[in-house]
Image 1 (cartoon, rainbow, N blue to C red):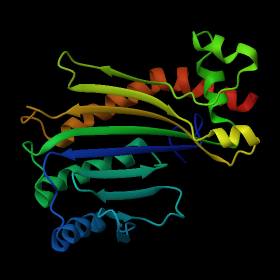
Image 2 (tube, rainbow, N blue to C red; image 1 turned 135 degrees about the vertical axis):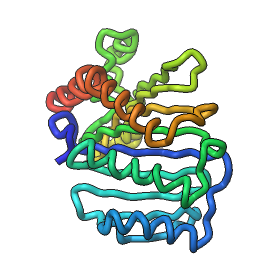
Image 3 (cartoon, helix red, strand yellow; image 1 turned 90 degrees about the horizontal axis):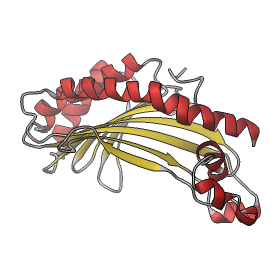
Length: 247
């Protein structure tokens, strides 16, 4: 059961460690990194190199909680869907950050940014844009256009990025993602797909050499959780849940 089960159908917590230089991709380095993670998380058993060149180690997709680690050309991604608790996600992401400097040569000089993403999904068979507009456009200038001559929402994906420090090196981004297209609206046929809300908090690394990756992660996670509980849940997720139930 995800920690936000009352607010959404699926919840994910993802970590992105972006680098300035290419990550090592030799079989020996990749296997050593993944083997070390496997010792701590024996459920991570499926290893694959995709056609795009990235490596992924993940657990069985049939599990309710799903973990995956991805090594791309210039980023390390740690993902967990439907964790039992935020602490469970913290433990995975912090372990990846602890190992990356030693196994992948990712130090302060090679770090571009650390990004933490909260993902909230609703499985909905209908017009996603209509739901988003009903929940979030009411009382805004967009409402008039939606009501004009029987207008029907076709693409409505609000997004906002804010700087959280004077130099714009700490940023938060919120965006809503619809998976409805014009053909579906025209035909009235809608498959059940996830309507998603994302919250990302990003620290551009720069001159933060006196801070460890784990320390930076903990600050970002605390900030993201505060944003989620004081803004995202009451002002975005709750209205979306209500609209889905009404439309």
